Amino acid sequence: MNYTHQPLCITVIGASGDLARKKILPALYALYCQQLLPASFSVFGFARSAMDDDAFRTMIASNLSCRYSPGATCEASKAAFLEQCFYVSGHYGSRDSFLDLYERQRTVCPLSVNHLFYLATPPSVFLDVARALGGAGLVHCGFSSPWSRIVIEKPFGRDRESSDVMVREMGLVFREAQTFRIDHYLGKEVIQNLMVLRFANLVFEPLWNRQYIDHVQISWKEDLSVAGRGGYFDNYGIIRDVMQNHLLQILALVAMEPASELDAGHICNEKIRVLRSIKPVGLDDLVVGQYRAAWWNGRHELGYLEDEGVPENSLTPTYAAACLAIDNERWRGVPFLIRAGKGLETRTTEIRIRFKPVERSMFAGLLPAGAANELVIRVQPDEAIYLQVATKVPGMAMKLQQTPLNLRYQEAFDAMIPDAYESLLVDVMRGDKSLFIRKDELAAAWDIFTPVLKDLEQRGQKPESYAFGTVGPDGAQALAARSGVVWG
Ligand SMILES: NC(=O)c1ccc[n+]([C@@H]2O[C@H](COP(=O)([O-])OP(=O)(O)OC[C@H]3O[C@@H](n4cnc5c(N)ncnc54)[C@H](OP(=O)(O)O)[C@@H]3O)[C@@H](O)[C@H]2O)c1
Image (tube, rainbow, N blue to C red; front, side, top):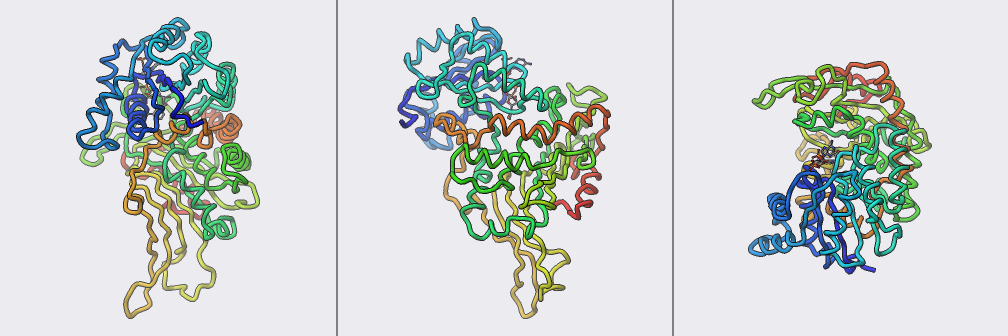
């Protein structure tokens, strides 16, 4: 049955926070404008902050965009959406608070209604919330309508053990089929295009292996400091915050074998298979860094240790680069270099698939040494996919250069690119788990980084310092050079 015909009650828990305000509630409004929410829906915000419905609506309104309802219709559609938004204040671990929520919902929602709970709180309260929701009887156990589903955001634990505990304890209230572990990178258009690019085009898949690919780079760079979120970040660090989840998910899509069917179970099985073929990262395969104060773009940027909330002697890395090895027939011997950092020279997320140079080319000498094809998939900003190919420069002389065959999303598609949260929320309502992390996949991803995280912490290893606004620590260049690679 089409999900839009079933009444839905959405509860955003932690509704006073950044994620709810800037991402989840605007995404719900965008879906409303596109008629992708059920005809009968309501949105409840729940958090400790004292607010009434009006204050909640005012808070939401300030972040709603008119991009799907431009012109004169926008104000009316905002008002109609906000009329369906309500707020209940309470405590996360309190069954009574969720009974209050239930009572309030009964006055607004039909008796038989699907429930979507979005946990937009710090992970430290996930279990309290789940238990209190269960205790208040708000969770239907069936998977078919009326259903209850819960969405949680990373980080899912701090290591394999704590992640297993969270999975097990949450599982006492929400079954695996009801649990949607979101990695919003998987909702991004370009990432969703990865499988299509690989498996719906003849030209890539035959070359997608160690015979033709020299190495793969996946980079996540941010030109921002932790800016006021130091307290949260210091608990996790860049490996847990970005590498173990976003970068490994992207890597799994780059490296997985084709699934026999286009469904969540088959795709997830292939992603797990490749994650399990990755050797756990050792200290020799890893470089960690921490940014220090510097003048950048005409501003004095504070160093990580100067951020309020960060202990003055913190060893938490704000940068990490790792060289991963996949031990299977397709990839044996191909370095997968991944790096993630804050306080760098630019903001970008991209994948670079570097092919081997043509052997004994008759054009050898006309291109720079080592020139080779490179497929670049830019996730953000300015989504693009381009392939660097050798071409002749027009003119009398035989002069070659590397030129991009370019697909820029803004130019190629006369369509609005949906925000990742919009597409992922639609998947939750449909019950499609293809882009969500299954518990065994989560465990496989933690197994890659848990040993090295423990080693770093036991040794008290000091991260290498790098100045804010630079490319990161020198050690990262040296790490890549050991595999004969220069970062792109
Ligand atoms: N912000 C983003 O764009 C983003 C992106 C990806 C993932 N995430 C993840 O999503 C979750 C929420 O992110 P956020 O940025 O919205 O976090 P946040 O603003 O720090 O927290 C959300 C709400 O939770 C409550 N809260 C904060 N600290 C708490 C604590 N120690 N104990 C109990 N309640 C607390 C606060 O509400 P009350 O005080 O009113 O109860 C706060 O408004 C985090 O797990 C984060 O890692 C966020």
